[in-house]
Image (cartoon, rainbow, N blue to C red; front, side):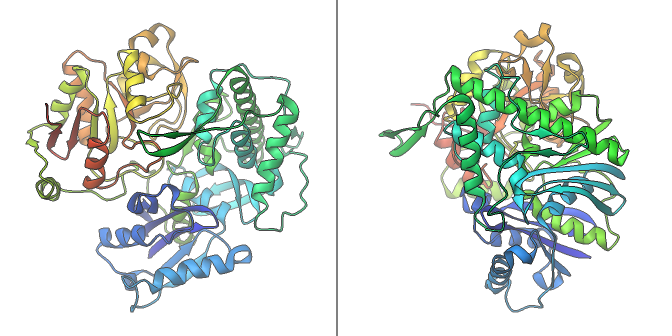
Length: 553
């Protein structure tokens, strides 16, 4: 069976995924194609076209289109999205596939569970809201997911964290900044904005009135921001300034001691609530293989705390556990209902477009960009990195999700702390924000303390205290890092880069951050890579088997 999964609408990220005979074969986010972050309210037309093209099929070959919402709350949105997509000239005129709807929380749960490699798992999805559900606990066995409990939007942990983000002066989509800032502060251990029940449930105490309204989310965020203000005082307003260099109005938030304290307190409260949920869910299902889903699953610090709690034996998190991943979840859920499920866990997040050397050369020549063909791009980049240079890395199929995993990355050496400042400056990021390492299994054993699920860079752990001075550019202020550990299944050029570094006496570790500039999606095509390369302070661009340098003088 061939299933095309769609996500988008109602303020959620647009994406498309293709599942063939139970296997996830393509997944792409619309933002990467149209170059607008999150692509809210957009049809996933470009992403859908890519998914079909990469499989060599047309819409007429698709058996089912699966959407990640139920029509009870979003019939008009679903029909508009589906109808708009099928009316697009690229898709119009052929047979219309059957349409199936999958609830939003089940889409989250399915994406994480069916790609986990587990035949049985405790599933915990913590989200903002979808189909009036914010948190879900379920038990996955084989192809089936049995819902055990769920909580309404008034109990949303995602909305709590978004309210905290709002209070601190950051915007929607900048929750990761709060997570990074929290490490600088000391939490108020006495503040617990949730009531944790003995039966494993929890309660926020916020009024459920108005939950039946589709726009209840913003008032809930405001209510949480007000509750944070009651505890910690009024927030500092955002500061706006026109930047004549960038010709843009820019906004910044205060990050002083008070804000660090609030961020740390909110982060600790979230971790305590999640630990309570995980412990009760594992007791209820009797299964210590745990799968985390939903947007809160991107909180790497909390994920690391869960792993190190001793509550779980194995932990899996989908690389796009936010709303962009629900297209995959909806398609996988429909396939599983027909008895089709992936035979193994997800080995790589590289399910997006790829470009051959001939295609890349055409782009470079058409734009009169000088380049050098090299025999071993990994060896060439290893030499540049050990020489202290910062390199854009564009190789293989584009990864999905918010983490760069060695397909669309900016790479540098982690051996000197000033490199952290330089890379953040290149990306126009705040200097207090951490940068992550990619490393070999052997390096992880040498440098890290009990790393959790690390293939997709989704759990924080501590760097061994006696090793922190060796890789200071990727060690956060609290001694932690968010590693990606490359095993034998990692993409060949990226894994080979670590070997080439080792041959030069450098640790098998590289500073790795997403190949994009501030407020832009990760680069997707060779054109995107060139634009970001020449518009930034990067020293070199490794694109396919070609190296691009900037003119000197």
